Amino acid sequence: FLVGTQSLKCDNQIHVLVYNEETNSLNKAVYIHSAGELWHLACSPTDRTLFSSCYNEISKAGKCEMQAAIWKLPEVPAVGDLSPPDDGLASLPRLEKVTHLDTQKYGSEVPRVLWEPTEGRKLVSLVNNNVLMWDLASAGTSATLTGCITVELKGNPKLTCAAWNPHQSCTLVAAAVDTGIKAFDLRSMQQAWQIEGAHGQLVRELDFNPNRQYFLASCGDDCLAKFWDVRNPSAPAVTLSDHSHWVWSVRYNHFHDQLVLTSSSDSRVILSRVASVSSEPFGHLVDDDEEGGDEHKEK
Image (cartoon, rainbow, N blue to C red; front, side, top):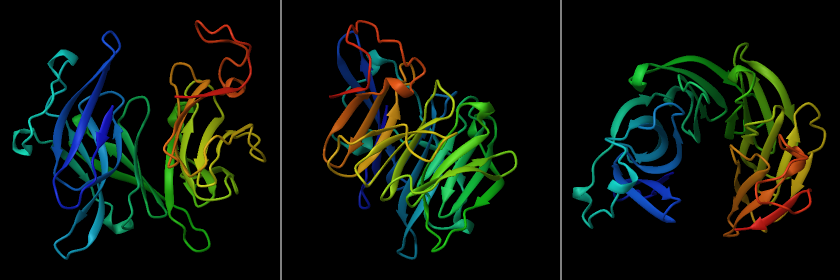
């Protein structure tokens, strides 16, 4: 797991967390991210040393600007080699900036960078109301802009989050704009489908089911997490209302897609079982003798 810090005054840090199942312990390695406060992190699916960050930094003119870059970890230590860092920041290793994504022409807000799910040779970045496509060179040494989709709506609302569909040869990206969701075909660079009014308030996060086509999870400021069959987007297939404040994140378990995590600013992370929209709606988990159906448990 990668965790980033947020500070405009001090150097920020990337914490690489490794959970050891055998000892039930959590180990970490810490690296300096000197560019600015971190707002989003995403890892390469094929190279464990590469990741992207979206960050704020203070410009020479004194303005707070949002940027995006690809970074390389100096090394990824084995679990047994991880140890608590020294108190001094000077002793921490620094990250290598591999390439910078120049997005200033398209706007000042860069909330997301997504990696193509299978090969990691392409990137998508959200910039204001634009979806930018990038080709990544070998080892991430450079990124070439190959296309742009501009979402034009009344009031020019900004894109808040996105998810790359791992199915259908990874040709579809869904993005949230205000309370709705729009999907774009990356081959034609045109809109493929949309869900109008997906949430009553701002949509915060999206995630495609990794094992079952056509199913998308979303969450938002209306305190809800919803699961959609995009072939019939008139109403959600399942709605979870377990949180009492904004739901900031929703994620499928990549192996058991009936398990979904949601996190909220009500200070809770909830593990839910949503079997009816999973790849095994009539199956059950190992060591789970309970009856089927949608269940959820706090963790």
